[in-house]
Amino acid sequence: MLFNVCALYIKIMNNENQTIHKSDDNLTIYGWNEKLNQLKQESIYSALAHGRVSIVHRTCYEVISGNGLFQCELTGNMMYGKSDDELPCTGDWVIFQPFDEHKGIIVDSLPRERTLYRKKSGTVADKQAIASYVDKAFIVQSLDDNFNVRRVERFMVQIMEENISSVLVLNKADLRKSISEGETVVFVGSSGVGKSSLVNALCEKPVLLTSDISLSTGKGRHTSTRREMVLMDSSGVLIDTPGVREFGLAIDNPDSLAEVLEISDYAELCRFKDCKHINEPGCAVLEAVNSGVLDYKVYASYLKLRREAWH
Image (cartoon, rainbow, N blue to C red):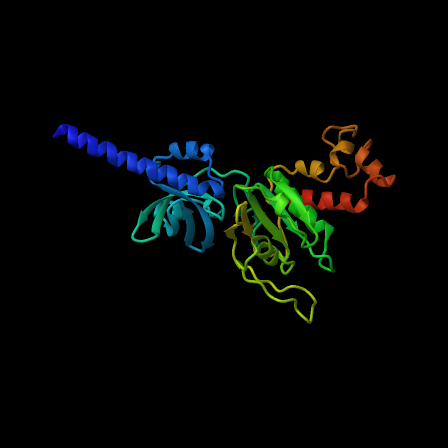
């Protein structure tokens, strides 16, 4: 009798392990890997299911798991025990307790990596998580009056702060070679530049809503109202984001601006190591500006972004 019970237990455990491994295989295309699995094992909820947040609806989260799509809510501890920027965002990996049919409760989230933030509108220091576990960020710009180099710089500074590769997209050219299987790519840009249309073109099917060009302004209409993750056939994961009029910086190291805007080479030649590049004697950055080697507009943008970051 004892032998039969033990044999039954082993059979059940083997079936559960097979289900877990199969689920993990299904999530590999969404970026699940051994490192994430190790992080999950460190959680007290490691025995529960895991998945990736695909869409955030205020307090409801759509989570893609190895066993399908689940509509999840947060536990009270997570909802009221975390700051707004710590709550799950699109791209986050979470641990949840399934219940009912394709519903669940999120009990924990794995530590974030390569997270794209922006300064929260109407605040001085609060930041908002846009997407996490991002490998590449496509900065989409339309080739019309909406094109703005300074806006591109803002995106690039924030993107590179998190060690995310950036790609500037100036047209609707084929980008499939830039997206590998298992990679996560986020699309950012102003409203109406065609991010959703580009996602649809890459997926070769209408997965996101789009609008026609406005006849009065000649520009695209704002369509995306949420950050949404979609899967390309035999390729990577795409995250579309709502267009923004202003992209506020949320970086922790303002000094990194010099490197992003390619001013660091000049800054290293300054007489003083703590040079602010404003009116100090022996400032190599000012000398480069005065001699025309460094574009004054780039220098002015650097000062403006640095003031904003420090503030």
